[in-house]
Length: 523
Picture (cartoon, rainbow, N blue to C red):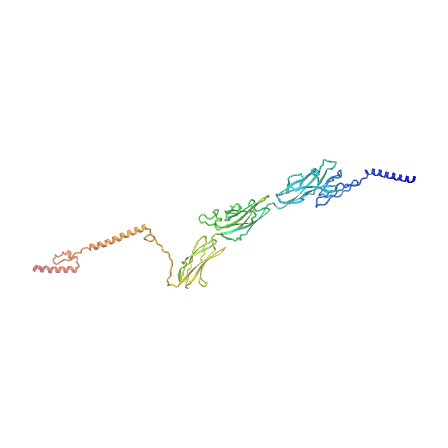
């Protein structure tokens, strides 16, 4: 019994000594505990730093994160800030645009990732910085969020953030600093809207009026709407002394023929404007007396402007062409159309008109299409031109013939023709003629002058008639009568007036008579 009791007492004593040793050694030998584990933002290399009571072990930390240690906090439910990330971490911004950057802290509690509580967030301060200032700027340098305003040139920059935890509760929190991985921002493009214009009109060197100027417009980096987009059509006359649509090297700008704004509807992509005489002369550019446009090259311009939130951009597309207002046409003056012609020499005369005429030729073909006569009738100039063919056509064979004038232009050939019937010479030919009647009694003379001429003629005729009638009424003048037998003998002077033979005869007779009378008187 005593032995057994001694063993029990010894055992209890040993256990008591062990318990005392354990209670005393608890404060001297402490097991290692993890204080904090910091990880980088998602997508970046992780870094960890573990602090042990003794000895301490340090792990490598990437230079891009640069976290600082936060000491253990007292208590069983302590909150620890482990990292701060920037959102978005990589982004692109148009010049003149902006983006919002936000700091997002990460916390742990009992080695579990949790949302940082209000006390932690309230005690965090942030410092923001831009490494390439000309790429853009921040609206603030502190705070959990900032706005990055991009510049106007394509560039790239990084945004750096440093966070500091400053708690007034030194019992549960230890002040610490955390650096976040920098955010990358790229400024792309120029930020201006891009405008594309394309003519859908099939332009030629010569454009015959009327025709439609059509074009399409597309805008990127902006929208087509009445409040943001303006479309206009401009026409200029490229005279030799101007310098195109703008003044160039001191030359004056080309004269403006037309400048008109066309309506715009939201989402519209196609525009059209009719080029006719009325629209082109809406500003009165045509010659005020002749009503014609100069034979020049004209420039057609489509202007488009678009204004987005960044800039107002204007784009233009131009095309040059000659304007053709008058297609060639003509008539035959001689021989008179729709008449029958006698065989023999026939002379042709034609009148024609048109823009940019380069040649004209007259041909005569018979019923089988064979050319029997050919002559040039081209005359340079503008407007109407009349040409008489120098060489006459000798029509020998009767029949139906077709006379045709072929007018040549850079934009095509134009024909006008006339049929003629040729009959043998000597047959009756009916010709339609127009008679001219003057209201005056004498053709080509006014009524007053004609009356005066008739009065003078009447006076002359009256005088002639009066003289003739008077002579008839008065008779001829009396002649001296021959001497009678009983008349006295004429004197010698009177006898001598007769011929020599008569005088001697009378004298001889007289002598005979005188001698006879003296003896025997006659009864």
